[in-house]
Length: 180
View 1 (tube, rainbow, N blue to C red):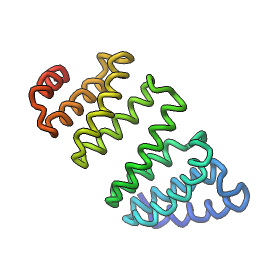
View 2: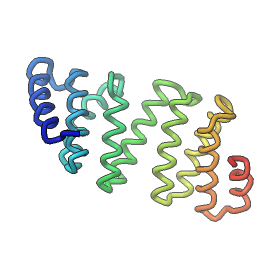
View 3: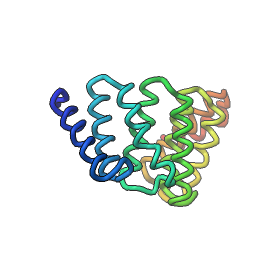
View 4: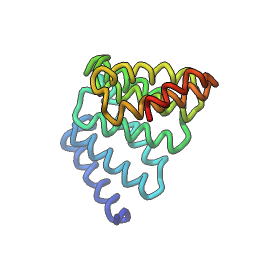
């Protein structure tokens, strides 16, 4: 919680990592992520975003196949959302979703998790039909892989919300009742 002391230490560590290991080394990228978190926690989300963009760029070039990629991309997306850069955040969510599909397969829980996260983002933007599509895709995986898991019921509830948003109440009701 002593951000006034943490940030300068991370800044020095980042300088050393870049000098010794280069800008794309996993330790350097992790240090960037940690420094970005310190900036964000201290109220400087713009500075955090700039650093997270710098960290995410080499990860994107290698298809996100790197240690710490998930942490960095999720922090990048969260910071974009915090700053109201919703189109950019959605673009990164879609990139990350494609990477999850490539890495784990379209029938995997990691892919369902990222589809659900995109669905939540779309619900917040009141893009009901877009949200419905990705939430249905996520739910189809969950119904097969983990039909009784709490996250499956949450996914179903989110789908019901998308249906209600587009005023398909008769379709939403059984989905919400089943979620309950």
